[in-house]
Length: 430
Picture 1 (cartoon, rainbow, N blue to C red):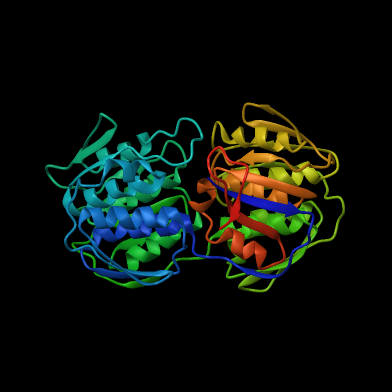
Picture 2 (cartoon, rainbow, N blue to C red):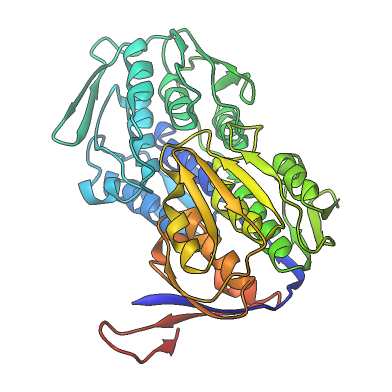
């Protein structure tokens, strides 16, 4: 079994570089299905979810060629719709973008319902509502989504009942080559939605309003291949910002878009952390000891992101006084709290609200990752804790963070990946 071992209590120093945004790269990769031509996608993060997306494209009949570690050439001319292997689709949430892309290009799609992190019920009803408004007939049978548009797709006005990033992107993919105009009202506004729209527009689509709550898509007859670079990952950047604050460090985080980090920056500054904006980098300097208590509520962008909930919870455990962390997006985001309590955290969860009694020193322990971002929080907690913490279920971390161990080791962390044979007390460094 592969695990991460962290001997904490060390300050971080130097600079650390952020990779491409997972949540933009996945829909852009699967969105190449629409193009039917060669695309070169740059600044891809080296994570397991990207590998899964490329495996899906290969299984569908695309020609996939890695040019270097972060650049891929994809030729989707030979894609066969409806052939995504069940297990690949189940391996990640973003596999549902195959449906929007296939439906947009071929007028038909069949794929297994997606997997990914378990935050309770995550329905795809808004996706289906959008597809049906465009003229598709949709059935969910035996764990698979079956879509067909016998008369072709036609633009429509679609009001999102809830703000959904996945549904906004999926409807956008389906509507790019639909006849006429599609208007998505109450659309999500996250930076990765803008990045997907920019990619599609570079391919010849006609999309306006991405980044606002009204997106307009004028259907085009065809798209063409392009070379396109993914934006930096704001959640990876935010995670390193939290790590710097938790360890009382002075750290420069490079390859970022500071505008995307404003809600994270605001909360860190409220806790007494200094943030300097260098244009394409930020410097994080923890100057207040202990950190100040605050209240946080996660919200859709531009609010504080739900994907930064577990990471800031660690900081609230280290802060002096009582803080309240409210989850405004998912019903069961706080599954990770049990692991933090193993380390001595005092946290009471009531539904979507957690009350954190800060100022209690964390202790090293054997913990596990309950999901991707919770895994990052375990690493941050371990970095801030004197002694050795061993983290299990690290495949969650590797779904969304590239070379996390190597990056943190490069700025002074005592962290390593280890292999522990089942039922053995021995270990070796990987």
